[in-house]
Length: 223
Image 1 (cartoon, one colour):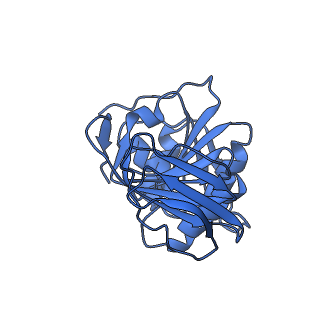
Image 2 (cartoon, helix red, strand yellow):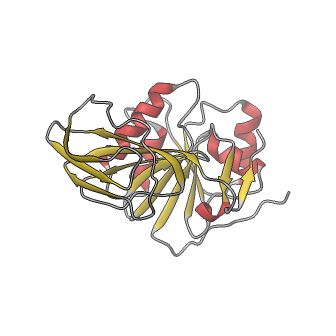
Image 3 (cartoon, helix red, strand yellow):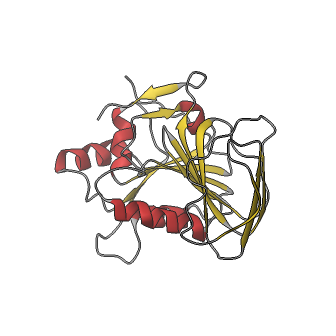
């Protein structure tokens, strides 16, 4: 497979590609500035996708993988491995002028502390950053919204103790419920109506899981 660029340079949308995922929807990459974060840059290259830039200390890569990245990607920011921010956080800072940023991957894996760090990054930049992989979508909401119907399950977790939430069109509806921090009542709900709605006063973490397959241009990644 030859390396190709699938992004547009003139865009206010970006994607930070990590690793620990199985597939990626090519439509997610389209018209986005693509950042290969650390080993994510290598994964992109090996699957025929040229990132616009690679950013990281590349400590998750072996020497052959590092060489492959530096031999093939023109724009690289090499970070010091001794730093106060994660590679993902550095990528978000680099993309500070972008209005719509997806962090792709990093939801599973052996380093769960990095996943928690990414959740904190989303919270700190929730107006323009969300996280997803081939099976999940994570975002933060602070006002009422129509939920994403492309997933089988959705869970809501409060980020403050004053959240009031009502759910309509769900398997388990709610009416003016005070959802507090560490309250897991809203775990694994299901959208059953195309007109479903979340009436919200407060701030919540929204986790969608189990992607409904069949209509996207999926690329299965090689590792």
